[in-house]
Length: 483
Ligand SMILES: Nc1ncnc2c1ncn2[C@@H]1O[C@H](COP(=O)(O)OP(=O)(O)OP(=O)(O)O)[C@@H](O)[C@H]1O
Ligand SMILES: [Mg+2]
Image 1 (cartoon, rainbow, N blue to C red):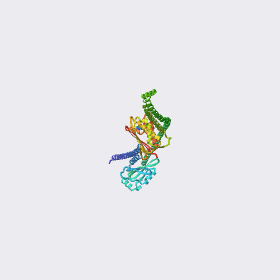
Image 2: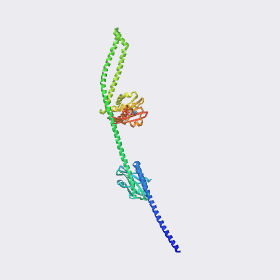
Image 3: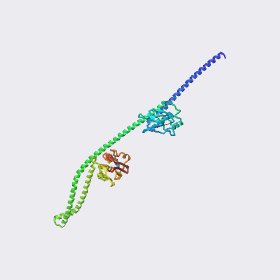
Image 4: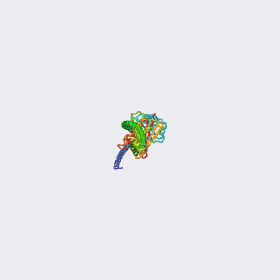
């Protein structure tokens, strides 16, 4: 080879070596870029997986579907996130550990050794336990079969205590950094926070409903006070009126007896004078005879007896009304006493008869062998009166009221049934509420039934209602028999 060729060859060789070196360098650079990109991609994927997991748990806390469902879903999400084979959770209930069924495994998985549970329930951090360390042959067999060698115990803490623990069973092949498990623990605490919020909300709701119900009780007590005040003044008024009427009625009735005797004497006297006039020629006798012919003295005397009978009847009725007014006037200040319910009903009917008589046909189905009731007759009368007036007011035209009394064991049952318009469910729900009325402004205060309810309750009894629109209503009152 000539020198010139040799030189050219050498130059060519050097150039190729330089080019190859450059190519090598470039290849290395590209490879390291690819590695870097791959690494970044892996990092991104890992971050995406983490944020997907945390997002899913955050969504769970917002959905707020209660303890079991939230914990179950959290366990499931954590299982997916960690690439676990199967999982389950347990929680403490009245000091006992309750274990859920296993998620992702068809066969029965025995519980861990109690020490493992105690460890985590007494402890606040997650733990990873090697299955072999548990010394549980059956558990070990199942785990081995499924290629599982560890269980991660993730605590859920609320109000500073571990209340729930998730068991995540990891396969041998999985290897990850402990930060990943930290993420799970943080997510578990989020669930714990949700449980705390739930418990606080429940407490708030409870105290709110406690406040509402004591407000209702207060309102009812106030309504009862107003009504008993009203009844007390009505009672006083009735007692006053009854007393005032009682005296004149007394002397009218006693004079009436004397008047009847006088009339009997006069009747006999006029009968005899009539006989005398018939045989006398005297002028005065003739005039008297003319009056008799014109007026018919005999008829007058007969009619006087009828009029006297009617007046007698009227007077007796006035006397009865006065007596009823007096019994109605007896209010709270009266001592409780034994009384007969049938008589109480009869007296009440007399007091309200005016309100009923044009519309109502009354049917009394009384058990005549009723034992006495111990309580306030006036108050029970007030309840019956309100029921009867309500029934009559609910009648668009004429209707029937059936009053039934009955004894059953130690209970006396009073049923007041009407054939009035009945009530829809929306009205039935509210009838015992103070101030609830469907009547016009000046027709009803809406206190009648709430007061009645209070009275029956105070007597140790119950009051129930059954009603059907267009058919009628029954009020069933049960009271204990007196001793
Ligand atoms: N027998 C009944 N038939 C149909 N509705 C009834 C009957 N009894 C009660 N109600 C309904 O229940 C409501 C409440 O009755 P409640 O006796 O408490 O008050 P009220 O009769 O309206 O007023 P108050 O008794 O103060 O005069 C009535 O307005 C009425 O709508
Ligand atoms: Mg009423």
